[in-house]
Image 1 (cartoon, rainbow, N blue to C red):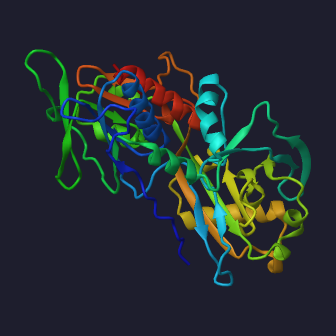
Image 2 (cartoon, rainbow, N blue to C red; image 1 turned 90 degrees about the horizontal axis):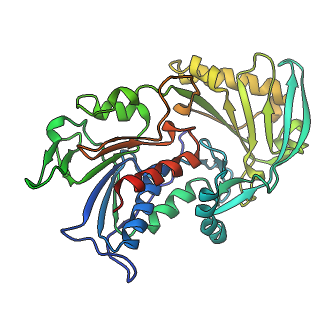
Image 3 (cartoon, one colour; image 1 turned 135 degrees about the horizontal axis):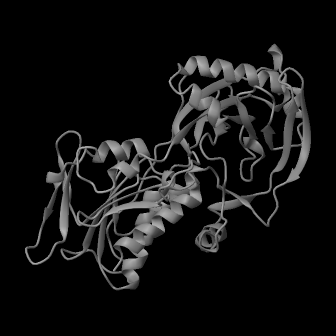
Length: 397
């Protein structure tokens, strides 16, 4: 079987509105590498900041894949269903907003219904892997809400892209590694620099006043490895951890195993001795997912995933499937009809002790290069917002 992915359509709009500055030959030109949540939020906040100062900005986002956003959703439709499908939020399942600044940023999206609160009923699985015991633990409340994008996790990134007015998104464009020769002084009267970017096929992408890299850590290091970027060694300090996602689907609710059919929980924390599993999420119980066929997503623990990061995906899938069967206890007649597995190599940032203080961004002011991303912080969606606000502080007039 094959997975059917959505084709994402991004913003490619440069026409101004009556309340914002118009990009021109004198506009500050910014290249953003990566159309994840950090890249999209950076573009949006930069547009707002420059407009508030009456300054023009012209942004290009270069994305190596065909879509936007870090919040990933996967679909598949069984042959027996003409309309319904399985749906898996196989990346981030939810996100929180702890700071007042991020809460204020999310409020318009909540009012528009792009984001909803998920008051999930939670449970814990403890005991042993051969004899698990599931116990209800409560419900996520409104004091510290968990947010989801609606009607799917990819919706937030798409909505952000659609808001951009002075930003062009270039999909399936892989920026070639930089060299120090990419950066040249463009005015003899000052020290400001411009950087010329090229794609991996040798095509020139343009010349920019600022280059903002929001790619994952390994890709950021690769992009700047051959340069004299002032903070290159610092980029290598954060330790990234992997995570595997297992996706299981059933064609009918009647064929679910009793553990799922009778489940009173929506999120299950797995704390079984020697189990590779971390959490189980029931997708069709989320707000706005009522039409989704029975679908569950299982996240493996970061430590276990890291130990298997280079293993064959088929081997990992089988081990996770076996562990999930021990937990949920299905038989042949109640086994899932759809099985898939995905490896996230850079899913979380490990918290390590270091004499060097952590940074949310790495700036080489002489070249006007900036590297940032959620991996510079805690690897959360709020980390993307914190990184984007740092971009604005550095670049905005």
